[in-house]
Amino acid sequence: MASPAALFLRTPFAALFLLLGPFLLTGSGAASAQEATGVDVYEYGIFERGEILGEFAPPNKGYRHTAVSGMTHLETTRVIPGRLGVTFGVRYRIQGGIGFRVPVRVVLKFPPQGLLNPEFPEPLHVDATEMLRELGGDDFSAHTFDYPWEIEPGIWTFEFWSGDTKLGEEQFEVITPPIS
Picture 1 (spheres, one colour):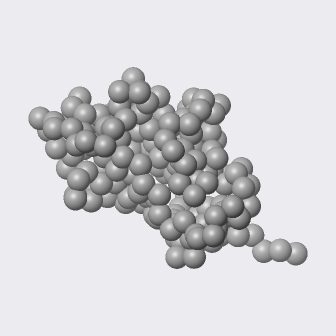
Picture 2 (spheres, one colour):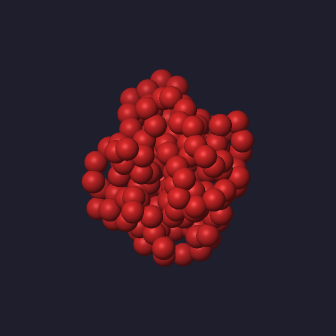
Picture 3 (cartoon, one colour):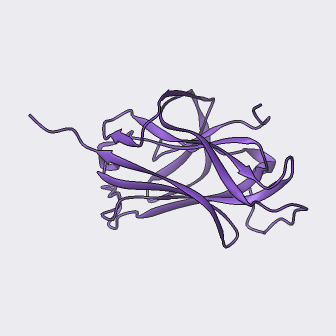
């Protein structure tokens, strides 16, 4: 059963699925009666994103966070073709109870060379967004290749944190097709 929150997609100029409005943290830690104990990734791979609804967090070296209307799972895989328009990521539930909201930080680690937006002199190696998540609720985090500078081959890692506790991670290998 899906949570009442909207889904969001993470990508530079595309999107990360997050919870809007009252679900976003404003910088102060929120106390909860429950704690996050883990993450259950129940779907991963390639997705088709829905309509872009708008941005929900400030950009990080051109890496934008945009809300979308939904996601459709297309293929279960951890090997991702590095092509414009490809969206990959995970659907997950934060474990530790049901119904309580807890702070969760989603960290996307890029390959060692990072992403080099031509508008910024330094590469981006990691992006993180912290928000309140409902324990047991359905959530999503993903990346879409919208610009050529985003396509970097190597290991991409989605990490899930609550405070100093790492709840889990999922890794994908982005490959670029041979040039003929």
